[in-house]
Length: 89
Image (cartoon, rainbow, N blue to C red; front, side, top):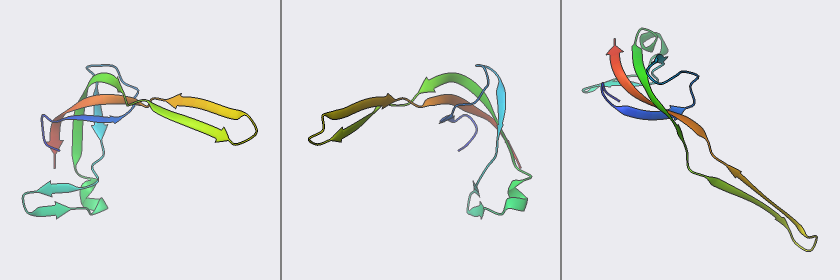
């Protein structure tokens, strides 16, 4: 991830145009890789909410043979599209 990238993340309760802070799990800076929790606590990633989005539709089918039981269910995950505006180390 770098400044200017557009990411799709799980739903965030923010409107389009709002800014959100993301917690980094891993920082790669050239050949240096940082995964230490103490060092990552100092890194701040800021992103701007672009728009809400939805994931692909998933169909869930349940069926039991010889009993006449059929159940169909669908699911569509709510997501948020964000654009990274700043990474401060």
